[in-house]
Image (cartoon, rainbow, N blue to C red; front, side, top):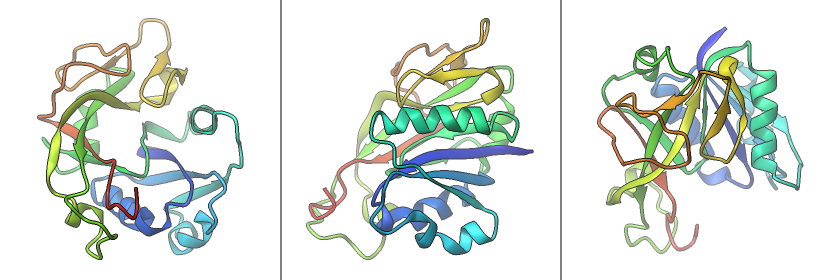
Length: 209
């Protein structure tokens, strides 16, 4: 059984996908489950070496109605007994454990809770008109500030279903908290990011946008 994995859905994210995957392995995540929602270049081809090495699971997922929530629900059901924690994020979101080098060490402090809510730090284009060669994290360094929206890292055994891409419903008596251990019942909360945050590269270059 894994301790910390990621679930995400992707469509035509080829230019940034490998960087995103490798970043999260370096942050301590052990496996990534990717739902391919009809990419022109299939994710299974883009990440063929990582899939062959058993680091990434790619699921062909050509769902048109609510594809993100459908993928999240499917992942919760099928990975319930395969990973202690699942982080549900997007390809333009990079998880940064700040208090610990390894996200698994951070999550150990929150095992009593069904979920941990991490806040967005929003990044803009940094003035790039064309896609820069240095990649996402090396090219977009000027933050627009910490945002009230959260994304969720959850324990599937206590998680019932996604309510939105940001938050989930949990078993009776279980709930999600922020890094201060304050309950977060919705998609947003007061911004805090001393221990963990999610860099959200929303705009990128004009070409990407």
